[in-house]
Structures are given as structure tokens and as C-alpha cells.
Image 1 (spheres, rainbow, N blue to C red):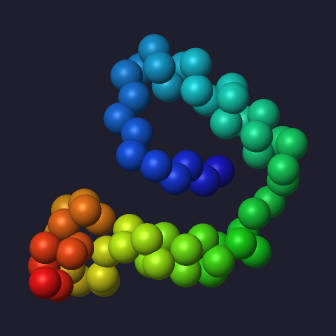
Image 2 (cartoon, rainbow, N blue to C red):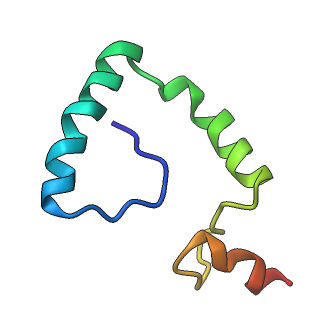
Amino acid sequence: MYLFGDAELTDSELEVALPKLALIEETYGDRDFLILEIVAYLRSLGRYLEIGSSAAHWSETRKLTN
């Protein structure tokens, strides 16, 4: 199961979200073939971390490279 986004859910929020995520996965099926496209898109938005980077969050990437 993939979840893209910045999510810090409480236990009760997670309990509500999990069935919805399961329904999405059941409806749309396996999306592994999209991984490279997703990665390219996120990089184009500047939302990535370099391997070995000291950044803890994608938003720090630009700070380290500028």
C-alpha cells in the first residue's frame, strides 16, 4: 500500500483512514509500475531526498543544495 503525503495521524484518525486506503487499493489495484513516474514527478516538484542526505524532510532539500 502506498501513501504519499505528509501525514501524522492519531490512532483514531488512522482507524478512519485505513478502510478508505484499502478501498482505494482494491479499486485501483497494483500501482508498482507507476513508481518511476511518481519519483520523476516528485523530483520535478522538488520533493525528494538525496540518498545519504542529512535532511530529515524533503522540504530541507533545497536549503542544503542552495
